[in-house]
Length: 105
Image (cartoon, rainbow, N blue to C red; front, side):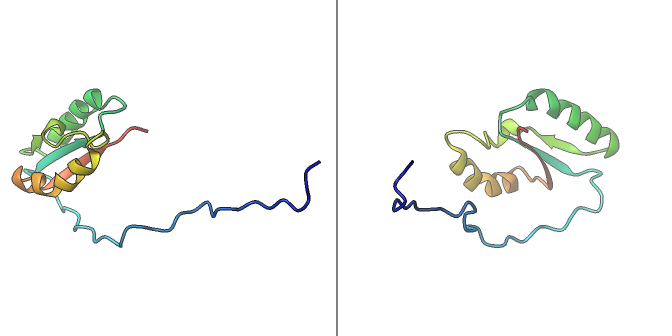
């Protein structure tokens, strides 16, 4: 077999956390009449799913308006880091009060 004096380095399979604790915004009490944005990673069938989600939300929360995912860009592409860095400002500019985030499964 092999040399018993051979050693191997082992790595811990879990990485250290790199992100600080984030605060979470308070949940909306009611979505009626809210401006809802969609964010998508341009993967698994969002182009089919978001119209269905929008229709369901519009029925459940009358008076709501919607900002399409194309407004914000691809949340998983070559410019993902730039898109995510710009996202808070884009959401403010679009006057979005809530978001639906769709990522591939």
